[in-house]
Amino acid sequence: MLSRLQVCVRPCVSVCRWAHTKEKGKALMLNPHTNKGMAFTLKERQILGLQGLLPPKIETQDIQAMRFQRNLRKMSDPLQKYIYLMGIQERNEKLFYRVLMEDIDALMPIVYTPTVGLACTQYGHIFRRPKGLFISIMDQGHIHSVLDNWPETNVKAVVVTDGERILGLGDLGVYGMGIPVGKLCLYTACAGIRPERCLPVCIDVGTDNETLLRDPFYMGLYQRRDRSQRYDDLIDEFMEAVVDKYGQDTLIQFEDFGNHNAFRFLKKYREKYCTFNDDIQGTAAVALAGLLATRRVVGKPITEHRVLFLGAGEAALGIANLIVMAMMEEGMSQADARKKIWMFDKYGLLEQGRHQSTDSNQEAFVHPSPGEVKSFLDAVNVIKPTAIIGVAGAGRLFTHDVIKAMGCLNERPIIFALSNPTAKAECTAEDAYSLTQGRCLFASGSPFGPVTLEDGSILIPGQGNNAYIFPVVSHSLTICIRVYISTHIFWNYAQTNQLTDEELSQGRLYPPLSKIREVSLQMAVKVVEYLYAKGMAFRYPEPLDKDAYVRSKVWNTNYESFLPEIYDWPGVSHSPLVD
Image 1 (cartoon, rainbow, N blue to C red):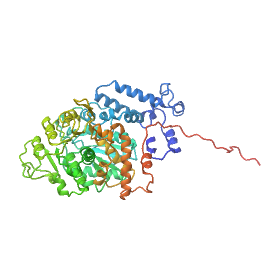
Image 2: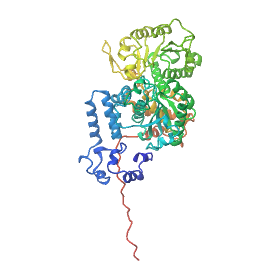
Image 3: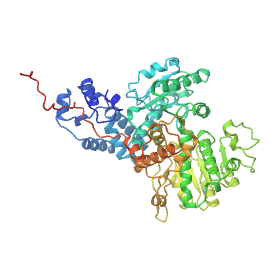
């Protein structure tokens, strides 16, 4: 396959010649890396054995994209759009990414949250063809052999899930494969990482979802989750097999593991492998970036904030710990910084003496009781936070009374409803703005449309989307051959928010998604500069022009020619010499 040679620096005669001699005819059209549909030129059709296999018309990619976009506009159901988009990805990779990148505002909610959540719940019912690599606990002892079956040999980024905690939807087992597939779509669309270097993986150890265990269309093992030592041994084997096959610098992103396992594996592997957990660290970086952006409005340093979380799981703890680091960077002690953070979960406020036990990861944020707190509204009124951050995935728990209370306590209340998908968000943008008379600084995990207030002014809510972070992490770290990912790197990402003053005045706390490719590249440049300045990059010689270097690694969607290079041998005679 051509994709196996695209790691070379072009132009490269051998790449074109290899594609010409090894793949011809229908095989070129069946491979999404090489298929161009009716955009194959007449010479390509004649030389590569395609003549007659396509209609006579020779199309440009522009016409193909126009057809693609028109078909999408005819559809109103998000799930049907998802199925159509994924179908194009399976047939013509470059066309898929071109259309996705050109209309990222409209299509990211389809390939990623919130629609990808719906697609995961229906995964076995809408299944067309397999994507990614499925590894079950029955493959234990043979994972390297399973990896050998993956057709690409130069993988640099892996996104892996075990499906236990998919968005706010819970245990979806192998139906969770939609998440790694969607994440890696954004690796390419947002940061330009070559799609053939991305590997989505779903590890199947069973599911505790009773509905799926009785679903005839379920595609995984019909067994309850294996929580024994076999599970840990399987993940160990997987990690070792990945770096053995693809290299120690291969980035491995953990996605949507259960809370307990997410923290365990991050602690276990972070200093041994090039790995991070997006739910803990990616969410933290994007939330902190939004919080730091509010400083330009309220004029208050982060050390003066008091933050109350709804939820106390991996997302809340990841954000809280990064906020503590940010406060420490501004001179506050760790102990004092932690006192600024409060958490409220399904059992109530994290406070000393409560009947329900706390996880060891939560202990840093367990404080003496501030008074009687029976509800989240009580917590708001007693603690008087400047910011509330929802990551519980439990729906509309930022009630009207909670939002109004925040508006009474703060001139510019900060309200982040970060749970996904949209139905799980803690409140809507309209409620947040209207109930605070447009004064709140709002961000959400899933997209909400612009809100028109009573006075006619329009506010555009910011989407605290991890897509601002995880593609940049992969792009900047893999091109620098970074092995260990420190927490300070995520602190660095959070500080590189490219928000303009005009965008801030519109109500945004993040740049528009339409700018995400350029924003991602600018962030990657800053991180690459940081890595080299701190002696944390290992690709040498060090590039002098970091911006040019980062952009040179970006994959593009232009079609390539698969014709062999033909040239003359001037001055060469093929006749024998005559005395």
